[in-house]
Image 1 (tube, rainbow, N blue to C red):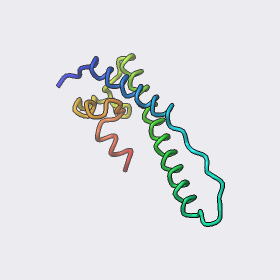
Image 2: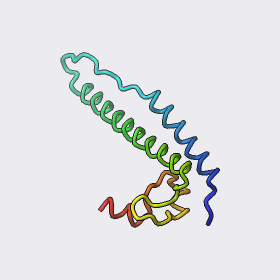
Image 3: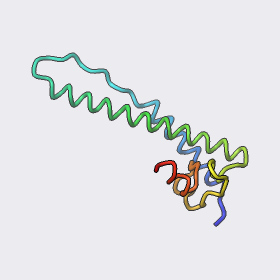
Image 4: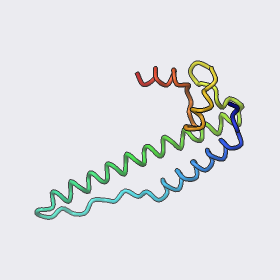
Amino acid sequence: MDLDLDSLRRQLLDEGRRLRAELAEEQIETPEPMTYGSQAAAASQVFDQNRQQALRERAQRELVQVEAALARLDAGTYGICQSCGKPIDPARLEVLPWAQFDLDCQRRRRG
């Protein structure tokens, strides 16, 4: 299976735009003043803030990975595992176009 680099570049550019828009929209709300009996509401608000922050951090990490993949495309090193130097399976790149590692190296990194 050959890589369609133009299609993958479009996917990466589209994903980068989507992530930038998500990060631009995402505003973490400041907590409201506490009143007597509002502990449940405060706890819910803190939970929502933590969730929003986690989603924002995930989007930032993913954007860095997308931009790095675009740089690898420009450098001619796209699709090469950053750990072992072997080609990354094209099916993996179609699912996760910003993948930096082949499956074996990715498993070792998580293990």
